[in-house]
Image (cartoon, rainbow, N blue to C red; front, side, top):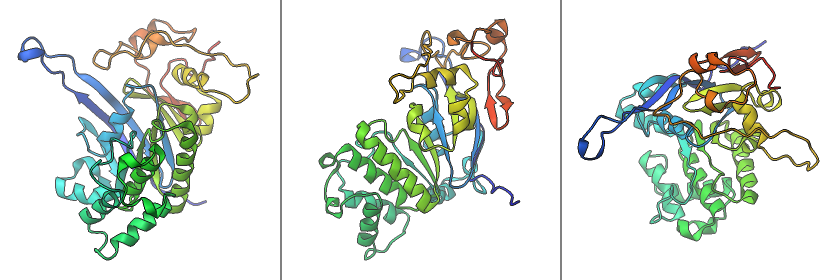
Length: 333
């Protein structure tokens, strides 16, 4: 038997806190620290996809921006291959950025409205010195073809493109520097449903062709199901469940995961499924609950004082499956 390849992406105990600012005019006590990401760890093997899911405010995008050092981490480590990204000085970090890129959620705001498609795709080639002046036109044409866009769009501006076309340009821009690791931050949530499937299929094809490794962020478990090899569920800055995608969808262990899955539409109108409706709102990361952060909204029938006082560790509850719940092995009803 051959040994499994080492992970391309290895994140350990990632923490990102935002210190509370003082009130208006600097008077009064500082506001509470916002614990946006509070000890997140995961690994992604080469050529695989980790789906990171959760409600708005769970910390998913903060994880993405911190890994790429668009914002600096409070603590933790992130290895991309043999490189410890958080320890790099500005010059080596700039060189490393070729290997990790991001596709943003809103393709309209992530593209420069004053730049044509041609200028958008040429800019990273110039910055990283990847093509001579005579080679750039050919590289742009090849990138557009790879993402399924017509070469006649090269002189158009973002406002002249549809949402799906703009997102394809964003993907082409990310691919232009030939990365290994691609962060997809809700790349289809701003698109029409009919276009979402096309973009997801494109990302899957590109992964097979280029051997890309994805961190795919979404709030919709139905979207992640079709692209992720492994799924990590976040709640209030922490991962509360992680397992292979098939396991999460078939045998969810955490009550929060079960509630998210119960909201996913099914194609069979006659299918009987209990809808789990959570009470209340997501607590503020500036003032998280004591004990299990999910306990104020948890519908588990065995919830007790232990849940209110003792934070559950993310632990192995089944082969290849981790969950942060004191009663992960127990049925919900």
